[in-house]
Structures are given as C-alpha cells and as structure tokens.
Image 1: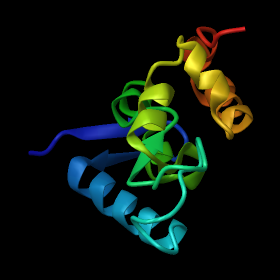
Image 2: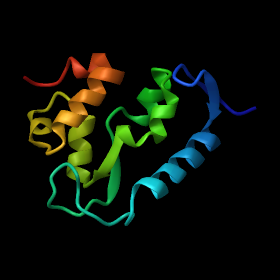
Image 3: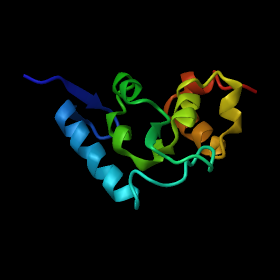
Amino acid sequence: MPNLYYCKLTDKKYSDATIKANLSKAYKEHYLFEPSGACEGCGVEDGVCSAHIVGKARCKTLHIVSMIWNPVNFFRSCYRCNNCVENVESLEILELKNYDHVKYVLELYDPERASKLPG
C-alpha cells in the first residue's frame, strides 16, 4: 500500500503518484514556455527549474500537501535562486526580485521558516 499524505487544506490524503501527477499538470498550466523563460528570482538567468517556496517535503510535514502543486508556492527559477529560497536564513534571499511574495507565502504557510528570514 502506498504512503498517503494528509492535507489539512483539502481534508484529503494523497499518494506520491497523485502528488506527482497534480504537480505536472500545474506546471503545464502555469508555464507558457516550460522550461525556458526568465528566472522570476533574478530576471537575468534562464529559468531552468521551479523553486518551491515551501519545499515539497516540508509541505508533507506541515500537512499542506496541496500547496505542492499550487502556483502560489512555486516560481520559474535558475539554480542560484532556487538555492536562495531553500536557505531562508541567507542574506541572498533579500536580493530576489520576488522576495515580497516569498516572504508572504512563508509567513502564511510556514511561519517557523518565515521567522528565520533575515531582517
């Protein structure tokens, strides 16, 4: 039997396969030109991946699984900006062009990590 992850936002349980399918669908609907496009964090480098503001594993731990495929929680990113979002204590995170959005999402869905933001 597969692992099921409870989501308090939807009051449902999701398997890894369902999570992966929902995320794939969300990427296709959200990104017009996946995977190419400008990084939303720095605007300069090619966005080659998606950065999750609240990481996928953390979403499972916090029981907010549906945030994994919610476009509010991810953005087109280069590897550098993806690393910045993963390391919320770094001063580099303040340089992100979408820092206000990152901070908003963290404060709303992961206050513990939000409290570690610099400044």
